[in-house]
Image 1 (cartoon, rainbow, N blue to C red):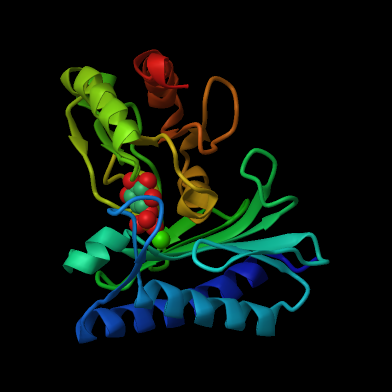
Image 2 (image 1 turned 90 degrees about the horizontal axis):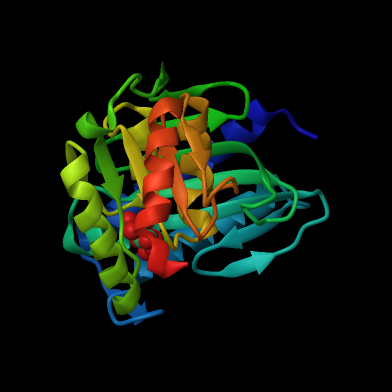
Length: 270
Ligand code: IPD
Ligand code: CA
């Protein structure tokens, strides 16, 4: 089994190359390739091309590992490790030229299921900002080489909370109702548009907390490890681990106040 730092090095090299390609394609002009779960759930040609080069590079560096990507699906490996990849997280931002999109690459041990996997390394690259967030399990988290720490001792009333909305209209309406209940109890809400960057935002102290229901594994695999390594508690519904049911990340004290409230506000939605 390679050391986590070795895996992180591979992830970083590949994510930087992928980020360069995404930025180049953005500069050339972005084309929608298809709609997915709903008309607003778009995939651009760049999403597909970037995933293709990531997949090829991982296969070359780690031929026995599995792969689980947003655009090209899953393939089981024989090593027990799987690379969980979102080639462009924040695709709608990417399409509109909003500079908050990211390449997200994680490597996990065990089944590629967030309820059971153990994340070993994760990298989130925001090519438009020149930011590289990285973490290896047990080794802390860093932004462009500088160690990251979550904010501490934030009262719920003073917390800046990030969240996001899924692509399904019914789910979005429910998520909007939860925001309506929460917004009067916190400092403010942010909807940045890329779950991986929200989680890295918690790691960097740019957000005090983040939550979202309905994420896919590739949206949070790398960012959740980076937030946890920066000192956040990352969890899900009740005492479960983070999953598509719910992802919540915050410094432990704030997490323990926010998580029960979210469960209460989402009451009609499980
Ligand atoms: C989306 C973004 C968004 C979140 C959605 C995700 P995509 O991922 O992370 O912030 O609110 O739930 O699906 O489609 O841009 O890769
Ligand atoms: Ca994506």
